[in-house]
Length: 222
Image (cartoon, rainbow, N blue to C red):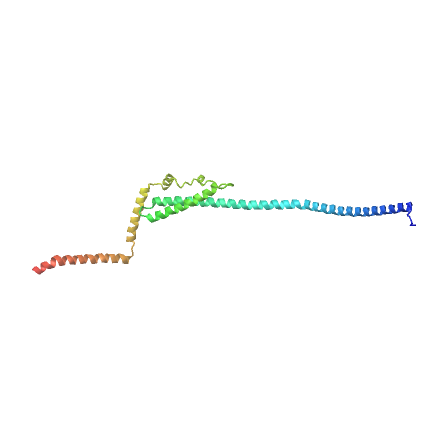
């Protein structure tokens, strides 16, 4: 006949088992709470670090953005000033070339042709700059015409010359003729002597030819 466990013993065994389970659950809960506390502490430290470093990072980011913006602004301003200077220089060159074309005498054909070709090249470059200005969505270059540079206004050019073009051509021709005369008078003494000696020799030769043709035959007839 098998030994049967009494009721009291069974109840005691169940009580011990429940206590063991409760102890293990309490231990596991303590380990979980400790791990959770460590996680929360680490998370809190990370949050505090972010709070401390974020303003510095935002400040550095803002400073970097401002530096980039200032750099591009300086580049844009320099580019605008350069384009304005080039446009102004081109217009002044064209004005001066137009002035030379009008005051040069008519026989300066090569010079006038070169000046007209240069004006065409300057005009193309000027139109290219103005096309860039019209296509610029951010900041436009001020119109250079506001500075009273009008290369198409011939009346202003005539007024700048202060005299009629035909009169200027005539004066240039007279000046050119006087220059030639002065160069002739300012020849070295040796060249002037050679020229005078050549004229003297030519005169003597003409005299001998005249005498041989008219006087010598008459003496032979006597």
